[in-house]
Amino acid sequence: MNSAFSPRTRPSPGRDDGRAAVAGGSVSLVVLFLLFVFSGLGLSMITLSQIHIKMNAYRKSSVFLDYASENGVKRGLEDLVGWFESGGAALPVSASRVEDFRRDPAATFPLLLEEALGAGFPRRLTESEGGANWESVSTCGLRSCEDRGTHFRILAGLVVESCGGLDRLKPKRRSSLEASLGVLAGNLPLPAIPLLINKEMTAAERSDFLKSSGIALIPGNQNLIAPQAAATGEAVIPQDATPLAAKALDIRLFRPQDLSSAKLRTALGLEPSTDPVPDGVYLVKTDLGLAGIFVQGDLDEMVLAIDGDAQAIAFRLAAGEWVLRFSPARSQTEFRTPEAVFEYETVPLGIVIASGKIDSLGGGVVSDGGAVQMVRDREVASVLSGVSLTIVSSGKVTLTSHLILQGVRWQEGVPYIKDSQSQVVIFSTGRDLLTQSDAAGGIAVDAGAPNELKVHASLTAASGRVEIGGGGKTVEVLGAVHAPDYAGNGNALRIVMDERAAAGDLGENAPVTVSPRLCFYSLKVMSWREHE
Picture: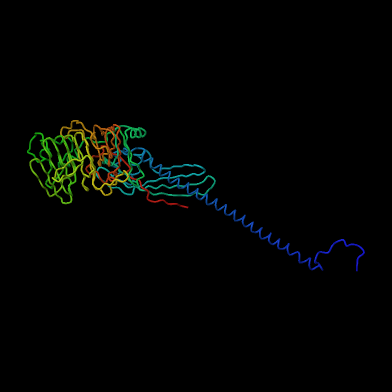
């Protein structure tokens, strides 16, 4: 039926009854469900982000704690190295303290270090930077010691413990380092000291002296303590060669005045007399074999050379030429004099006592004819592996050619001595062996020597100085240099520490310090530990 007026609302399209309106509300439910899901995901992401931020913050703090703890160990170790190096290579200690150490090593060792360094262990270091802080405590204890007669070789254990933290956090992180410390104490063999100038200098003056003199000290392998120069006004270098002379001559000498012409002639096998010993070279013979070599008079030339498995030494004086050849492997010695040739089924003691100066000393070769000739135009090994020589001269010694140990390899300008078992010690006393009067001593590199000179030896001048003649030279010394003074004359001197001598493994027939000294010959890290 048609309505007489228009309806107020229009019916929805396709809507016949109330059931269609109810079906249309499902969209709202879907929307609400999706809103719930995405809200949950959003809240989850926010929660995960907060957890991630906290974890990163914790991880960052943990890393910074590690850095602080590691810094404590590193700075503690650096502090120790600087402390050990600050006093130089040979720190003075009292003879009474060394004797106390001989009686009770464990109890006296801390006191020995304290006397040498001016302070003792434990050593503490506290620092902070950039919101981080750390504290290190270093302790040192005796592990073992070896009595070597004139001195002790000591091995100590060094521990550096560190605690690191951050200013904004309470937690701390701990680390520790263990190292071995090598120490020599007593009257030390001089080859154990890389450089000694017998005059008083402060640490700053020592540094300036090295720079102005063109001296470089080259460290050895895997040793945290760099070689140091020693400078003191106290008497350290001996002028008395009596112990070495007594050993070479196989006689007892308690004082330098004990050696007379008559006693010397008896030791050399000459006719009893008070007359002076004639100029020449004497091979000292004993009831048990051979002792050392004695030279009376000035040597014009002394040449070392390797002849197969034998060590050859040529002595040239105004009175003639003497040639000594000895083979440790075959236990045979040949001694050629101007008058005769002598052969022995043993080898001599490697000590040469020269009562006079040596105008030319160097290495050379043995020609096909058997002559020992000095070589200046090339580098040749001249000291047989396994042979140790101590050359003592009352006068000045002049180096004119290379002296190179067999088995030493040079890599990138640094010698490696692992394969060598040799050593050479050159000692100029500056004092006459018999009269004990002063003589012109010192050790010099000749102006005509090679510009790139290699000297594998410990050079000790009790008087005078060590000097380099000429110009444009670089002298490489594998060993040590000791003298009251040094004159480089604009030339360069590179001293490479012989770690064998520094550790006291060599130097049996070397001069020793007049007064007791202490030096650190090695510092090596053994382990590093992190503690939560």
